[in-house]
Structures are given as structure tokens and as C-alpha cells.
Length: 326
Image (tube, rainbow, N blue to C red; front, side, top):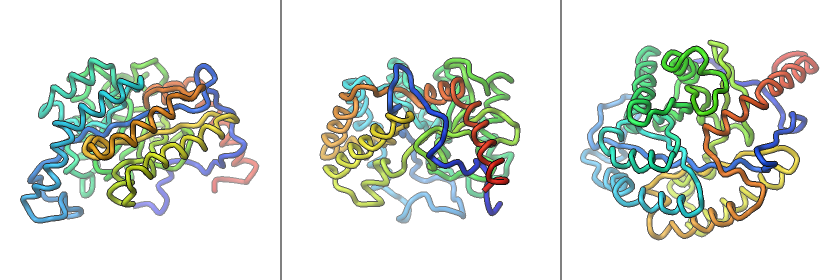
């Protein structure tokens, strides 16, 4: 493993070319429902156990199954109410296990991007070729079941490798044509990652193929699993956090457009005692003027068309002044 993966350059927040979202919006707001499939008894990975308790892991499996049986419907109805088109971080095995969920999302024109095949099968320990095949399988599954050219990637259970971004960009080009790395409306493949968590605006990413590729903000801090399970946040406080996060990004978006993402899980945010806080946050955010309620794909497409080249030029100029890369 490299000491520095060198996915992107140091690029200070201040002094960047101004971003203006469609219709003058200050914030590009998107919701990323993680719709996942967990195996009760997955293949053993020596680098990470799938479940914290010995087999059978009924508790963990059961609540995740609850999410696909009950929670998904609750969340979908709520997003419908506020005009939010979800960008699904999809365990693509769900296409076979629960095609009815895929159909409901297709009917609403939700985006599907890859979250691997199963969320109990990790990138850790894979060879580069094995990871390439896993990424290829997930992208092909999305295309076969939805007709969409998969634009984005979030590694299964965040288990990415130093090759993940390069492989996703390359497989997208292989599957969907040599032009899939350039802006083509919604017909793009392999152009953005959610795996880096390093900025509040889209940023250019280095790929070994030289393909135009961006990181789209996907906040672990606003992620419901991190909030509820890791940080032990109460529902009311989580709702406040979402509003406060939006307030700051909306304020800064006056100068240059920002991105807010709420990553959700249908077995977390959709539990009865938590749903109200999420709804209040959605109501608050979408009631503001100058908010572009959108998808990850649309943000990546728009940035590639309007701001990517200027960003690369600005980074190059800043580094020339500084005398090289930080």
C-alpha cells in the first residue's frame, strides 16, 4: 500500500473557481439511500468478520431484512412527499433477491449506483483482477435490471483498495464505450466516487487511465448509521445536525455552490421512532429557495460539463505558485 494513495491534489477551499448550480442554487442536495443485502452466513474473509456475534447472527440479519421489508417503503414514501429522487447505493445482489424493490425505484426514476454485490463481501484481500470482476459484475447487474449506465461507486462496506477508483473508471469505459468518461447527459458510466469524504464540493480525481473523474461529497458525519450506531446520537439530535449542516452549506453556497448529501439506510432512519426527525429535516431543507434537489449522477454530470476543466487548471496554477504538489 502506498503511503499516500495520491487520488487527488491538495486544493484549499478558499480561492477556487466559483460554482453556480442550475437556476442559481446555492446547495446541490441529494439523498443516497443505501439499499443493501446482507448474507446470514457469508464466505469468511480473514480481514474482517461480517457479524460481531457467532453464527447465526439473527439480530443483525433481522434488522437489515426489516429495512427491505418495511423501512424501504417508509423512506420511499417520505422522499416522494418532498420531491426527492433517491440515488441508491445498491448492493446489486438485491436485483435478484428483491426485484420488486428495484421496480419501485425504477418507476420513480431513481438513480442506481454500485455498492458492490453483497455488503457482507469485502474488497479486503482481493487481487486486482478479482476486484475488477466484482466491479464489472455489479455494473452489469445495474444495466441489465435498470438500463442505467452506472455512474457512481461506493465500495461494499467502505472496503475499498488503492486500485478501486482506477478500476471503476476503467470498467465504466470498457462497458459503456470510450466516450463514457465525458459528459453525455445521463448516459455516463464510471465517472464519480463517494468513497473519499474529503470535501464539501466536487473535486477532480486522478485516474491512471486519465479519464475525467470526480469525487462527489457523501458525508459520513450525516450518515444515519454513523450517527445512530457509532456516535450514539438520539433521533432529535440527528435531525438538528442535518439542519445545522445544511445551514452552514447554504450560507457558504452564497459564494460558491456546495453539496449536501444525506446517506441513509432503510433499517436505520426508517425505524418508527426515528422517521419524524428525518422528515422534519427534509421539510426544512426543501423549503429553502435556491436548493437544487438532485442526484449524485446529475451533480457529477453538471460539474464535468461546467467546472471540471477550470478546477484542473486552478489546481495546476496553485501548485505552480507553491512550487509543486503538497
